[in-house]
Figure 1: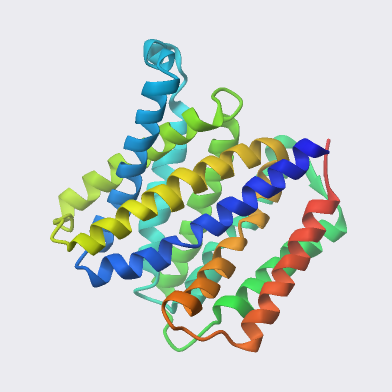
Figure 2: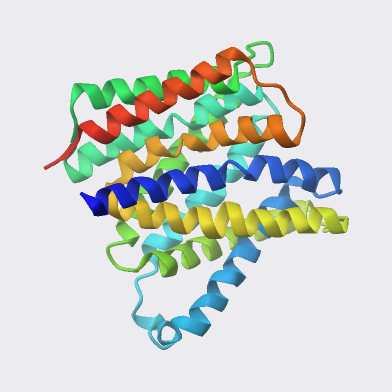
Length: 291
């Protein structure tokens, strides 16, 4: 049970750290960074920090590279690159709130894949918890239906599907690699496709202010190094479905700190939404049964 509670705690930390990514993005964009600049630097700088840690503390890994199974972390990394790109593109076609709702339907996909491939089952309270988490998310981010398009809806759902691939491939990777090594490879395999795409489209320019560089570095450390590692370490203890639901701490964190740091106001509905997400997460955490 202590291991399970530690896993819950780690995933919540992960969700909180992920929640700083859009806030730091605002500072980066204000300093002249493009979307491609920001997302590529986020994962490439994080990869450097991971590799530096491995070089100092896990140097034996380098001598074992030919024996390390890289197919799963490669799949997770490419899926994460696709999910990131699609999500960033979705907000150009539909409202940010609706984009977030569509993205977080990946929770449902993770539960479905877990049931099909791993025989993970949820009792009715757990299913109700997932529904509550999605409803709470809608209240937190808000939904404006004025800006909507079919392609935006499709990209939003596709980003959720790709994100579920990240979670499932990452969960399987943990059976072969320890969390810090798995996180390092996933970050690296995310950065490479983002670099190739940014170079091909000419959107990687790096014409940024020092403040934008600092925001990108902070995002790499907080919203990738810490966030990805704690998510992987927590998911290893609690499973993919619970980890996905607990990560709804991400939008709550984004809304709260946007209000504190960017002078964006919180509404009573957003506060209610945070409470509903919390109730939903508790239901899932306390009802999950694996067979």
